[in-house]
Amino acid sequence: MKVHIKRSFDSSSSTYDSSCDIQRLVARHLAELITDKYENILEIGAGTGVFTDEIACKFPSADVTCVDISQALLNVAKEKHPHYKYICADGENLSLKNGGFDLLASSSTFQWFAKPEKSIPELINHLKPGGKFAFSIFAEGTFAEMSILNKMTGFGSVYNLRPDKAYMEILKGYDVKFETREYVLWFDTVKQFLKKQKGTGATFTGASKFTSKTSYQKFIELYPELFGENGKIPVTYKIFYCSGTV
Ligand SMILES: C[S@@+](CC[C@H](N)C(=O)[O-])C[C@H]1O[C@@H](n2cnc3c(N)ncnc32)[C@H](O)[C@@H]1O
Picture 1 (cartoon, helix red, strand yellow):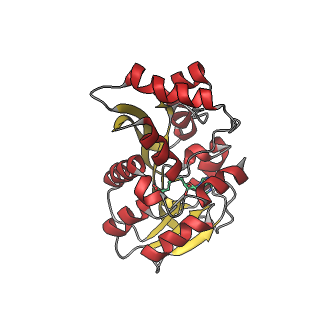
Picture 2: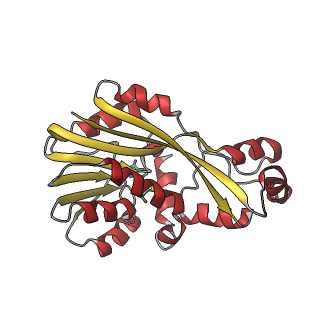
């Protein structure tokens, strides 16, 4: 599964930045939740550096280590912030020396983790005592419209996202604050939405890619019919945010 996720993101290196409308909004809000000053920051799932840009603005003199499973995306981030450290690795199997960071941050990434109940606490162990963490994670409820249409047409499968409560359970032992926000973005056409979604590389769903032309056509027709308003179609995203201390 990881190899498919990595491959999808690898292929989005030239389109991610012009497609990531929701991830940009999420990165901005996550940055707002991070207060105080930090010198040694670990970012997991840095991608092309969308959230890294926020970190760079807020903490211009910090040492930042960016981890991502996709080297192609990290190459884009490196062009923007050449002085940061970049590690291409699976964030669920990091072999960094634990304990050195004062902030651990990750935006729009942990939903791709296979075992977040194990790997998120392991990542938090990279913090020194008193260190802070802040995460944003796509949660169940994202693509609510597409989920309904998938059952009706067979097209538009949705990756199995965990409910926000699952992350609250994982983090309950820490001093932590939670927030879940729902966003609705409006697109001119279904095709425009599908193109943007493909552009972010977040296309792995675990389902077969082979769906018929008829299913696709039905999906394109039904989406505006069932959900459209004023000539636009809505896409719902549900994002879990948390910030805490160890
Ligand atoms: C939606 S992008 C978010 C990128 C960036 N944080 C942002 O806000 O735009 C998800 C990122 O997670 C990375 N990713 C997915 N699974 C990963 C894993 N197991 N370890 C490290 N990075 C991973 C992908 O390569 C991709 O860059």
